Length: 365
Ligand code: NAD
Ligand code: MN
Image 1 (cartoon, rainbow, N blue to C red):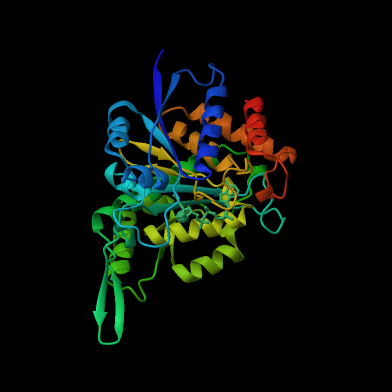
Image 2: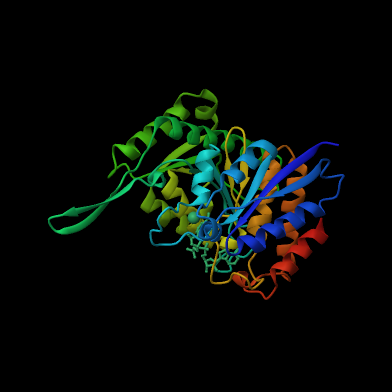
């Protein structure tokens, strides 16, 4: 039979707990749902690896991804907050080197209670530009008459903005097509599809101005987009405000790299926990599933990390490699497990371990 080869890069902290959990779930998929033979390749990266070997994203890992993998799962990396000579974040490098130009982050309220315990119909899809903005990391420190100062370059290009915009509008239509399959009586959303363009071009008129113009031109330049999708713009600060007040008002949200990063952690709080929110780093030729959360050093090694974000990221990987029904089976199993209310890790107010949640999801498959 066909084979699907997945590179596994747990990296640091709870990445080492949640990536094996995701693998376990993939392996539990029955063969009528997952027709291909699955195989895994264990790959190195991370800050701990850097401390031992002097490199955070080894060439060997990149080669293995390119030569023998159809996609990959990345855990999380413990990037230090101070500058370490020779170190640079492997996930930021991986996104750039594999040209994974969009980070797709669905934030859905579903079965998990929201932070305040109330049920809200949150169903956002955040598209984060993934290759530029401040993450090009061109920083400099200078010596001035009043002491040290530092500057950072922020790159916004037409090329990257257009690709991110294209991803946002095409996914808005895809989502709408899927929504149409839900019976009218059960629809919880109001007018959709809609794409919200996030920027701060009232202040950064050159960089965010180019972003805004370019994303808008993707919309106006395609009659299918402009006839079927609504667009709105939101300055990033008021975006955060509105997102907390009326998160159900958003559908697809497209943002430059750093705003997208910040907004998605905030959105994760609205649906209960960072431990629930998956992502996929998407390029034209490769996809890397990755939970939105970091390495969570405060809970690492205790078997209490919520594996659901990583499990859902594995499903996103399947979805984008042509195994939609296997992905759907995982999404459903996770929802069922959450609905049962029995198997919540501490971030959701429960006492279950990583192992227990993983086993419950596997059983539901
Ligand atoms: P974090 O996402 O690691 O943790 C934030 C909070 O959420 C912590 O209280 C943590 O315990 C909790 N949390 C996160 N994931 C969880 C899960 N699966 N289950 C239960 N609780 C969970 O963010 P941070 O603390 O700001 O950063 C820690 C480290 O992670 C830093 O070194 C940072 O550089 C790194 N980081 C890496 C990535 C990445 O690899 N893509 C992303 C963000 C942060
Ligand atoms: Mn982040």
